[in-house]
Image (cartoon, rainbow, N blue to C red; front, side, top):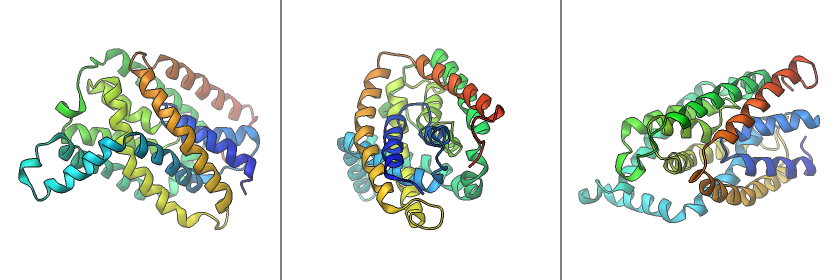
Length: 276
């Protein structure tokens, strides 16, 4: 059972970490373990992510409306099919397919073994190194409007699907893929946020049926955590996009590595349980 204090803390954690390349699901899992709380589970994590995705919808409302409206009209108006917004609509659909398919295939593992803190620690470290390599080697020149293609959308999509494992980070994995494809940091992150909307909202709505059942949290704390994640998430996405326009990801890389080694040490030493 999740209490009101836990809901407040986990809502803050979700809002602060969802858009940073440090894995919000890992932090919810880690904070719960360190505090001695029961693992809130994949359903709670998926549902409160609805709050942060609502923050994305509001922050990018103009771009999202243009994408939806232009894509819809392009189905009937051939002249609009070359418009960047119409193409972006298809790229988001195609890029969302990998995480949907793999999420269904690995549903049981997502709710169990993928939440092992030893695995979380390992993925934090490994994907930190990949992010560091991508950030150092990227030419940082391609833009979404001119260069995004179906092939790139699929690469982004599989990178996003890796975030089914806590510790990878949805924004971190997709941004890393964007950097390796030579997109600008801001464009790689922006597409990461847009691509996450269908997957996160779909997953959150699907998991709503679990709230209040069996080991899943009750509705009250879940709603509170979701609202808090929305408010904090809106502030976080605005800050993050400004930050990466002038800074590299080095600070996030160092943080991930330190946290990853700490988790492995903590579980090995018996300070916190690997699962629970």
